Amino acid sequence: MDHSQPIEGTGISAEQLQRYSDEFDLLCQNRHAHGEVVYGPATFMQNDVLKMAAEELVDFANYSRYMYIKLRAVADAIEAHVPHSGVEAANHVLPEPHQIDPSDPINLISGGRHVNPYEPDRR
Image (tube, rainbow, N blue to C red; front, side, top):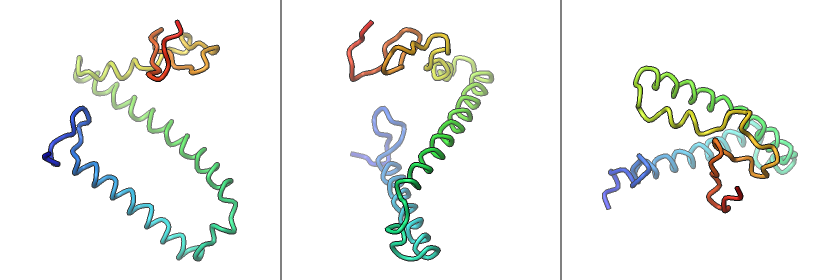
């Protein structure tokens, strides 16, 4: 296997995948080491880590929203300058608000098309 070639269907190579994974590990290690320097070793044992994690999850949810908005804006700009680029499909993944069925427990309808691959279509 040529690790420099894209993995089928992904657009990234095995080398990139490993590099990104290694970067993530290094970032985690660096953040932990920084925390030990700033707050002292094992101070997390004295903190309410569950509360801290819950606060981080809320931050992450907001970051996800902001990234979604940026990605949609980029997709709109690409489609405006390069019609039929394939990006327009990404802009139509989610249903319009009036198409969302609040009684659907998975709430994953896309223009009436069932999109949960783990559950048979109930419609």
